[in-house]
Length: 317
Image (cartoon, rainbow, N blue to C red; front, side):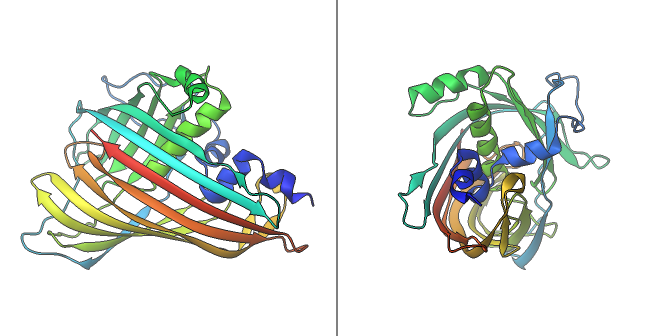
């Protein structure tokens, strides 16, 4: 089968390596249930899609020093927060001895205004947050022009008490082109799967725990994040993280029924630091970077595909 024509499509490259959220959105369609709203919520658009996020489980390795307490996110309804999300993603692909191709995305800076539309309670242990996008920018003027219709558009998410995001809501601007939508979706996808979830058990400074989560797309991945609580000042916590991914299956299913590739090797790992405030829905500072290499082969011939990838998620006020 003519694999090069399929593999060199930019969308396919992102699906294979960085697991573009576009795949998940397409699978969900536009009929997902909207998250609960409040009188302060921005009105939900009819084209909003809700993307489920796979559950994160935690396991305490070391409970840390006394005093210890259960860490929970409980930002009150009506809480507002200004934040800046910056994401980058690089993808270099080479098939056999052909010239390498670059499917990288430019660094995207996304100002966000968060509004908590539903605070967590004992009866509803989840926080619902609406996000308003500011002016999105990259280093490329042509890309900035494509992104301009997304200014003042909306997204949102639902977060449980541990800080894990359980659903992502997207409201693409009807005037935004596919490239712009894909960049925004990918940025949110990267941020969601770099979220730190806290354990249900009491922990103190020095605590170490692991976060296990499946990252579902064309390649189903097991992601393990090792988190260490390095500092706490009231509701402000600093966490060091190490991230590693491994494939669940030795076979990669190509999109649209185009066939399969053997996963010959897969490495993606990285580290970073995140600062959170338990009274705010978004991280207040920090960055996490991951990088890796992957190699695939066509089971029907001698074709070999090699990739090098990297991602970075950065938060600031």
